[in-house]
Amino acid sequence: MLTVTKNPPVVGHGQVLRGPVAQASSREALLAGTYDKGIYLRPNLSNGGKIPATSPLSASPDIWIAGTQPVKDFRNALATSGSYASQSPGTITQGTPNYIYVRGCNGAAVSSTTKVQLYGVPCASIQWPSEWAKYGIPTDRDHPDGTQPYYDSSIVNLASSGIGVAADTFVWSNPQPPTGGSDHYCFITWMNNAGNPFPDVFSQLDMSALVTNNLQFGWRNVSMQSGRSPTRQMSSQLIIPSDVTAGSREYSLQITNMGFPESGWTLSLSCSQLDSKGNPITINNVAMPALGHFVGVRCTLSPGYSALLTLNLYQNNGPASQPGAAIDITPSYFSDGTALELQEALDRGLVDFALSHALHRAFAATEVADIRPRPVVSLGADGLQII
Image (cartoon, rainbow, N blue to C red; front, side, top):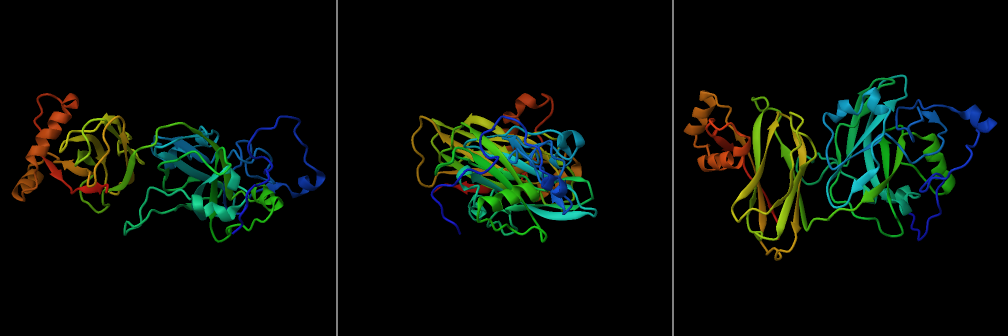
C-alpha cells in the first residue's frame, strides 16, 4: 500500500480549464478505436466508447446520482436511449441516505457479464487505487446471514451494444465532508470481471493510462451540499419473501418510540426502493411520538421485494437519550378482506385489533369514511436498539 502526504494533481481532475481544444497527434489517431472488451462506462457524454478518451475524464454520465430519492424502475428507466443521452446532477447531500446507480454499454461482439463496485474516494486519494478499498459504498442488499451488506452488484448477460444497469442500488447512508486535504469526492466505478483485474498504479502515467484507455473504470467528481447529520442512524432490511403465495398487497410500517425523550427529537425514514406502485416509502422530519406510540407509513409490496430502510433520529433542543432507549419498526399487512383469510387469521389469533383501530385512526385522512378498519396481521418486529 502506498502512503503519501501530498498528491500531485491528475490531468483532467478538479477544476475546468478553458482554452483551445488540443488536436490528436498522428500516433493517437492510429491508436484510436472503440472500446470492445466488454461493458464500459463513458468518461463524459460526448464519448461513445472512444479510446483513448479525451477530457473531461471525470464526468461519467453512467454513474447516476439520484440524490435522496430512489429512481422508479431504475433498471429500465436508466437504460433507455433518452436517459443514456442525459446526465444526473453531480451533488450528494450530507448526513442522509444518497442513492447511486451504475450503468454501462456492452462494446463486445458477444453478450457480457460483470460485477460492479463503487467507491466514494476523497479527491486527495484518487491517484492511489490501493487506497480505494477504504471507501467502498455498499448496496442495499444484505448477505443471507445479515452480517454485512454486499459491496458489489452485477450486470448479467448484456447483449452486444446493449445498455444495462447494475441490479442493485448503491446507498451512501451518511456522507460527511471529506478531510485530509480533500475538498470534494470522486465516485470511482470498477467493472470487476476476469478481463479487468484491479489495476497496479504507481505513477501519474499509470493513472493516465488507466482512465484514458480502460473504460471499465468510471470516474465522476461530486460536490456535497450541506445537510444536517443525524444524532443517531439505524438501518434494516425490508424483505418480502419471494415464495409467499399472495401477490401485491398493502403493508404498514409502524415506528414506535420505546424510550426516547418525547420532546425535542424528530425522526425521518427513507427506503432505497420505491414500493410496487412506484411510491416512496418515506417519513419526513416528524416529531418523536409519545412513549409507546408510533408514526407510520403505508405501502404496497410484492413477493421478492427487498430494500434498505434507514432511520435518522435528530436531537434538537431535547434532552439526551438514556441507555436502553430503542426504536421499534414493526411491519404488518392488512387482511385482503377475503372471508377465508380473515377467518384463518381470527382462528389463529393473529389479528391485532388494537393496532388495527390505531392504524385506522392514524390513516383516517386518506381513508373513505364509511369503510371499517381492515384487520391487520403483524409480521414481527425488527427492534433497533441504541445502547
